[in-house]
Structures are given as C-alpha cells and as structure tokens.
Length: 341
Image 1: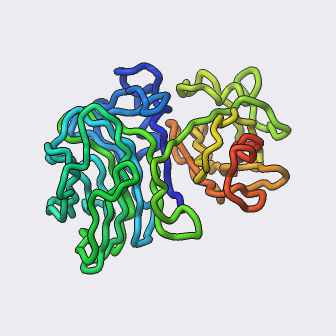
Image 2: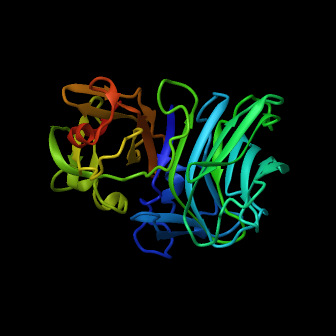
C-alpha cells in the first residue's frame, strides 16, 4: 500500500533560499528539526528539490504502518560522502532502526541503529553532486529479517536472516530524511508497505509530479476572499491568508479541476494535500474528496486542530471509478477538493 509521497518541489521557487513561507515543511512533516537549515535546490528532472544542509536537520513522518515490511524510494544528490550520519532512516516510534549511510568509497552502508549490518562489497557507483535513485526494502524481525538496497533499480546490497529489529515492535512505522555533514538534496520520495494487492514492493525509479487546481466544477460551497474559488487555492507558493476559501458549515464542499499531469507513465497513486486552519473557537475536521466520472470518494475526515496552518493529506491509490489503476486520462478528468465535517 502506498503510504506517502512527495516531490519536494512545493516549498519555494527561489534556489538557495529558505523554504517559503517559513515553517511550510513542518505543516506536512511533524517529525522535523531545524527547518532553518533547509534550502530550495533545482530538482532532479524538473522543478525543485529540498536540501538539508546540516547534520542536525531532518524531516520525517511517523505512525504510517504496522506492517513488518517497508519500502522507501528517494532521489538523493550529496555534496560529500560520509558515514557519520544517515541520509535515510527507518524508525520504530522514537527508536532508530535500519538506516542508510554513504561511505567515502561510494558505497552504501546499512546499519541497525549505530551497528553496521552490511555495506556494498564494491562501490555502488555513487559520486558527489549527481542524482541517484536509492530504494530500501526492509522486513523487520530479530532473527529472520531481510533487507535490500537498490540504486537505479540494481540490487547493490542485500541479505536475509538478519536482525533488523531495533525497537520493541516487529515493524518500522516511520522514516526520517537527513544528511551527512554537508548538503544533501532530496527529491521524488515514495513510502509503501507490503500490504494490499498493489504498491507492495519496489516501484523502481519514480517521479513525483505536482499538479494544482486550475478550473471550476459544479461543487463550490466555500466562500472565497475574492474571485473564483479554484484560483484562490492554486498558488505555487502558499500565500496563507492572502488568498483563500473558507466555510464553517458542515457538508459544505469545494471540488476543483486540476491541470493535466502531462505524462503517460504508470501512476502508482495520488496524494491530495490541503493547507488549512481553524479561524474561530469551534473545532473542525476536513474530508479530502475525489470525484472521478460519477463516483465520489471521501476519507473519514481529519481534525484540523490548529489556528496555524497545517497540511492534511490523503493517499488515493486507485481511481475510485472502478476501482482501477489511475491513468493519465482518468487523472486529468478527475476533480479533487475538501468538505467540512
């Protein structure tokens, strides 16, 4: 099951500048430290990436799964190679589990906490200032654990019958992305577990593409500060209270048409993100809604819980009108939005 994805291209458009607005990454990643050391960089294929410029900076997500197997894919570009700090770490709650580190020889080192489990016997071909797509698959167990590391789709480090359990549970339920002493750019992230019939194993070299609202639909219940609803929520950089839509009425719903994805590759899933906040003393939840053809699908709703902006997200693995794997045609025709609970 696809659990998470991010292009890291939505936090600013000025390279070498801090993410904008201040604190925008922590809205989506509550597991975070020192956002002030992060910078916007050019993306791997297009757009932008995020750079963690100091070993004390990281971002991540917790409570994603209790499945024993997790797979993570991430594009990385390092300005130096060192095993002092991991660039990708799996966690059991607050306990550091399996993590990956570069070595000065261009290898990838696998550790459980701080203990070296294995590293590639020969150089994985990693070099500084170049993008590489790294994938990690781990089955968590104290004696029958397994792991595999791929670079560009090639197995460069794997083993079975290992102790891959660092915490109290037979699973890793969270991840962190960090750095190793110098700048490390991040792009095109996916996270999944082994549950479900799809998205339960390596996806291979993957790209995460951002599309934004660009058209009105028949469902427009929220009140805009001015103009058309879709135009008030489709900005490239979040402008918070400069342009917005709002509602305090249960069942009020806004749905928007989105820009065409512009690609014909396979689509593993869609993650819809909504920046929102509460504007009075009442507590609100928000549903993320998808309309595909005549089929409407919504999640159970998530509490907003803050008068400061937070990001609420929903992963939609399959086209609800089927269900079936998303195609560029079905995605381009779908509408997405939110509903007040």
